[in-house]
Length: 382
Image 1: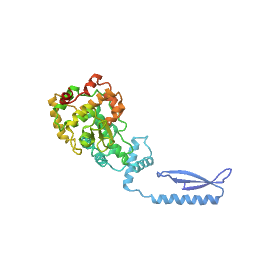
Image 2: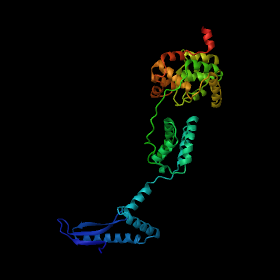
Image 3: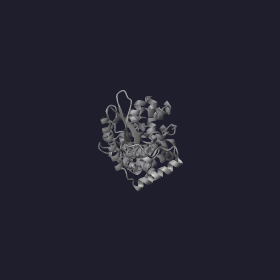
Image 4: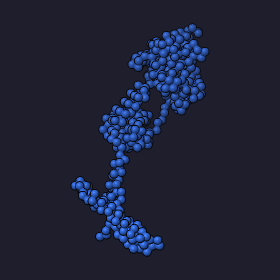
């Protein structure tokens, strides 16, 4: 058997001696290496150093613990059945690298809590946070105890398909759940968001439901005076219900040269200030209802929905969410022919406006819509 280091005389243009010696790789495996020298003295000194080194290494690792021996035996049994497996040292090196690169433990439930806490710290709207909680409830029940790093895109996609919902609802769930994993990746618990590559279903957008001029007139006349300003602002100014509920009468500038609604950043959904002109038909509805500057226009959401349901029933209208805002976008675009202008007034994007409201209403229907005024106003002008 070869010794740890041997000295050989060689024929070489510059050197006379070669030291052949054992070396220990980083993964613990042994290899044979060589070094060349001009004099025998240098070769002897180098050989002694290498011999001492390999002897010391052997003494440090000369004993094998029982669990280490069991691991080696398990590897050998496995390797006998699978002849093309990596070497024992390669397998150990890979396991060590995987351990060193492993992310800290982090459950899906913890990731969901972090996402909801993040929404609270950012002071996102109550509706946004309620939507998060609602959409994540079932996902928490099904995946909460799992590690975030264990959840694959295929699993999440299969879960979404089991919901058996419309393409738009499927996409909304995917967006919310994806935001949980995206935050986990930002916080260092994941390398990437596993839902980032989801193939989302195609959404075929139908024309939105809108009110005709006669339906809007019936609704506004059936509404209680406390509810009517909010409905008028949605129908003729494109304001969201939640935005209107945060306004006060000082934000409604009815006496300006060009009357307008002022929506401060703390009122809007996007936290971006905007204004919207008030058309003559809306002024006719709002002036008789105007209150003191600091009095609110809004009702609680419960009161709003209760009184709206009663007004819609009295008017013979089957109510749908955002019916008034969709009506504004449709009839306003029919007049302006400018998606960017309508988007600015609604606090939306021009792309959304074009997708939802282009070519939905005829010019005649639009003209009728913007002539909807209270009956007493018609009597005064008649």
